[in-house]
Image (cartoon, rainbow, N blue to C red; front, top):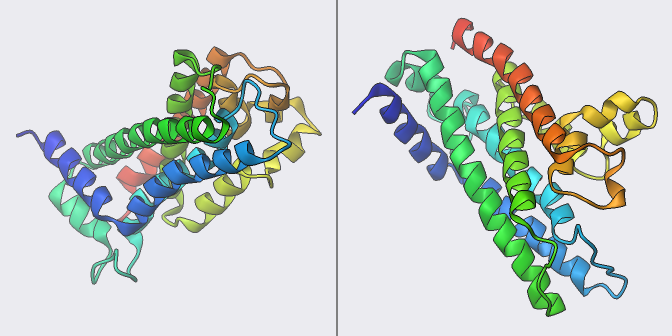
Length: 247
């Protein structure tokens, strides 16, 4: 068994046994489905091409953010049921001294869980809309479902990379969840400069949203490239810091 595979198996097991990671997955699946069901029950519900997808872009993103954050922040905490007597990062790096391998294993474990979260959230959300409205979500296509998958994957990786840089989950969680909700700083900045439309939380949803509420038009492929560029731009310095900084 290779070192990389052992590290991946350890990271996957570690994540699945973290109560906060399980909570993140549950929220990522149930929150968009619940919001979609409530919206569909409203007498003012108009449906439209983004029915279900809008909720996935908010509720699913919150779950992905929490997952990416706790995967790293749990390594540095010394309090609570998710910590050992000392920080877990010391044990992680003792078991996997090659830091890039350790980071790659964590990225892979988070990525696989984020993809699973996205798939389960999509099924739950569109099923909820169908059960409430009694009609299928006709606007669901393979391309849009793939867009949700890529968006939540990149969102989880962004949250992970930011937490690696800060070694604390509070700031990444606060900033990213605020931007994924109605209090979006990016939305306010977009009123001042068009460059804000290419922030990840503004551009990314264009991979699957098609309605007029998406703001400035960004093509789905362009939106995907923007998300990948942001992940690369944040993950590269995070990897350097992770390899050079003391545990």
